[in-house]
Image (tube, rainbow, N blue to C red; front, side):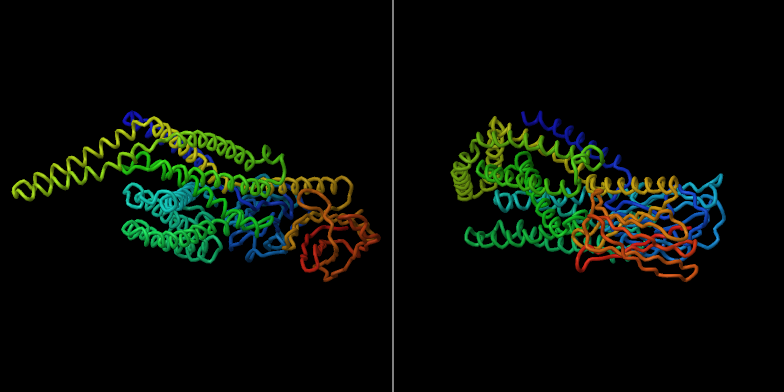
Length: 631
């Protein structure tokens, strides 16, 4: 019966790998935590006067390079000058040549978000009137193409290697210590270490091209590699390699000296390996938590340790499941039902930890129920939740088989020493006769092989063990697909960020149309004071936005559109071309998130810089600004 299962196992594995490949290849360029929430000039707008600079506002801080922001004229010639710079908060700009002629200009951006993912895009605006031609931005981009696919594959393999390494070692040390001397189990854990190490080196080489040009030829650029080592993501990958060196020492002890120790010495060594292994495993998990989604955004100080617990729970459950599958299918040594039951109990605790940490992560990354269905992150998360539910259902079946599992092989093993003594006496009697010693040794080996084969047939014939094998194999199959979905999920823009970006763009579009229809001027600026609750959008209205007295209103909102109750707002106006200002304005508080000032005097028409200082606490404040034509 076992022989008929083998082809089905291979077919199932191939189908699962194909499903994972489909998920990875259809992921496309990586969406990131940071999103473009505003720009000046705005997308698609026609301005009368050419701007002195172009600025872009993101949902979080980003890292810039010399070519992060480019402005191209209708013929594709770059018209920006100097390096990109931080304007304030999460707004970044680049100067452009003065006196730009009329036509349509293309702004391209390629930055790296705080959670290590590349963000790239483009939009257009026009000076005077749109031109008949504009630049078509194409070619290799950050996070896409062959490099993007390789990077996604490397991430998948690094997660798989971590799960097999940590979960397999924990299974041997915590539940089946006899497995330390089993060759297939040794190959499994060492294979996990090799996979994680190779994938980490691959990610380190790909990182520069992945966040930059996207060109395959840049993978081995040593200058890019040097730049990567200075980033948060590069430091995390290097830290992971150092921890893997410590993990190699752990593996050598577990599968070397450990199995040869006496019971008394083994107990002491078990305690030491458990402490050291836990520290190394937590450090490996932290190399993800401290460089990706958990490290930025809401409650990062809580999210990072929660992410570490989440990853360790995944490894304990799914990695231990893989080790159990190898023990059931590949190992000649019997695995006791007591070991399976102990693992089943710990796996149940891991599932509970996964549910608790997963609920927190879902709330943090989505923010609303609608994000489940209206954002790609939410849709992938629903798929993941469904797969976890399916996995738990199959695991429940496995627990039922475990409860019925009989230790037939263990009982046979109790008779094994008697057979060994018989074989040994036969060998000894052979030696006493001189010439028959070689023949006796050969017969003893044949007898041992026959006994092993008989034990294996008896073990495989146990219907409970056969049922457990099938259910564990099904669990492993679902786990492979689950891991692929999780890998794509970590590269997808969180639902909360996507919805905030949509809201900001909608507000910007609404304010633009309001300005065109009424003659009033509305400016929207995103800010981040850096505190635990420091992100929001400040809106400044000038009516009628002309020379002389104006009515000014300032609205401060949270990213979700609700009024933001903050202690202080200040506004300053500067006409840099005429060296006028800054003209300080301190508006009066009208209601929560609403300030107003009457008879704000604009002395002359021009391109005024409107700077708003927002203070969200006693120590957290920031200043954001935008230029606007008034008068």
